[in-house]
Length: 363
Image (cartoon, rainbow, N blue to C red; front, top):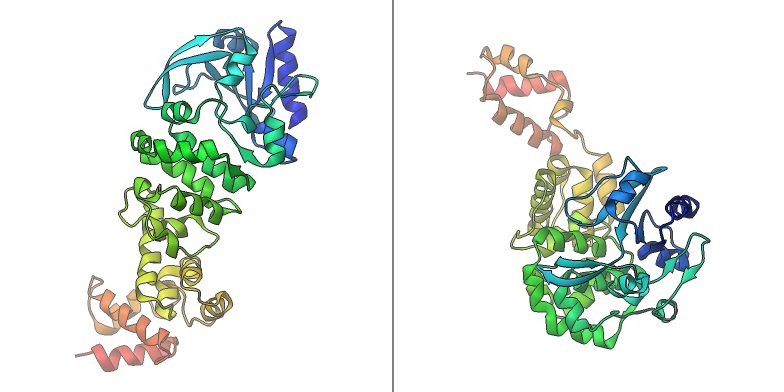
């Protein structure tokens, strides 16, 4: 990926513009971590970049930038700037500059201030390497100004701490406590996006502990963090921490959360939960309830039926047997058969099921 990124820099430079790789990509390169997206800063304007890369797009949400896909790598390219005024975390007044240094100084943390030129040389004007080596997350500017301008930096700091196993600088830690009220201006979608990254990190406990220690859980409406079961699935976390359902979910996520919470409420997993919710949801419930995973897997393997389609009698057969037209009356009969089969009180055999239906339901 580095070779592709340097190729983009060389294309821009050949047209007499200054440009650098910047931000997380360079930080991760220094740490020996692979990155997917690449940020570039340049003195070229958007119109210049569109001439160089006709397939590039101008994103609606970011003025003075273009998004480029080049050899299957995504690049976000922005023009050198100073951000003069913020409103609801968005810079509503910016000033383009020819100063590369001014552009670097507007960024969030020193660990994200490293840049790389087209020769692959790392440029470090704000001692970012030193903070990376010391595993410290430090604001480039005064935390009380930086966090107020963009409160999402509060969650980004916690996310980087969890992802990289770094510590917050004492001034940043203090600044978060003093400015946490500004989290209120963030949409729950933006908050959820950052929290998802915390929940997906290997050091998720570190991120959750920071949220709790900084007293952000009430601000973020995340509850019972001290009782949290640490698992390996993001939706399993949301089932535990979003008790008021203030965050937005897809229909599938809503269904999964509802089912996980039902298991949490009953505090058990039987054949009926396995049949109704499936193995994935039940394994998440097992992790939360500290039930042995292998036990649940074996229970699932031994289920007499895993879905309605496996019940060895069709609706048409039942209808013919009872001499009634197909209709909603069939559901209670299927529910009864399912319960009997799952309880192993009746065998899932066509002739046995027919006899059971005749004996119980024929008038």
